Length: 151
Length: 151
DNA sequence: TCTGAAAACTGGGTGTT
DNA sequence: AACACCCAGTTTTCAGA
Image 1: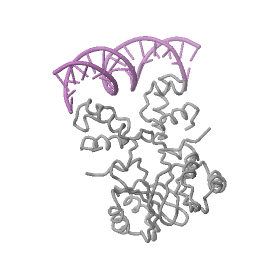
Image 2: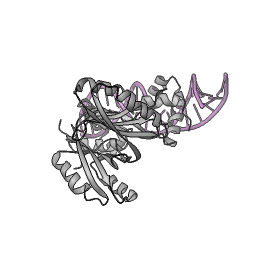
Image 3: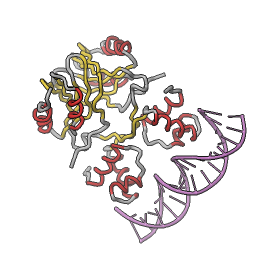
Image 4: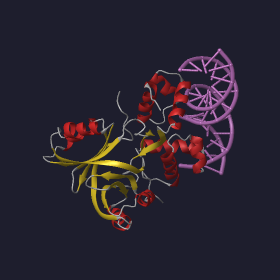
């Protein structure tokens, strides 16, 4: 799907505030409300906007520990591992890599005890996981929901 | 702030759909509309809900390349580096680590050319950046906006 | 893509449990 | 606290241009 300036303007606005009303979006993008409705529907149908979500402060929710887990995998079972990783509730991000490691996870737990349990019991229990390297996040500097390309 | 079942229910609902109306939230959490308003205000004021945002498909936006960049840093200028990293538009996530690396970045670019420019020109140009290791994300398996702890 | 009007929702308020 | 009710203002939907 082709995206014009109106679409990009809407996406940028919704990136910073996902609950903006149609009339506010219309004002910011200099179009009518009707246009905003039809554009948003298009963007959703095309899968460009996947969904909307609140952004929560994990510390304040009691999830004090964030860790990056780098995984080296063998005997690659791509499909099965994807499914198993997707069911782990602690995993916020999981991606397959090329380079020094095969998988990268970002994991959130209440404390280091839960992190240990995750890495050494859950993760190491998955077939194909050979070795893991766990790095604790001491401070988050940037945490953006999206990157919207510039003009 | 103490969070009860109602708060958690609202957070879970807003995690999966951040544009749910107050009446829908009320129905899903089995509370009145008024309660939803007061709870949401509390959650925002307390900083538990930071903001709301759309979630976009970066591939469809033309950002075809996602990479994890692990950085080893020396002569640590914590404050300055944070600011410099935060201004880089390609950076979706940046965090300081303990372990084998000092900083982890998740970066999105249009193509590998932009990625190269980011790593070897922008990033390596920042004072304190000693060495980088770039891993390309071949496939994203999990990409959740939040982790909401279970009961 | 825009406009106007009906329908639904919001954000208050009140008093009650 | 949470609830049910009400009310004016706003937002959304939908038709027509």
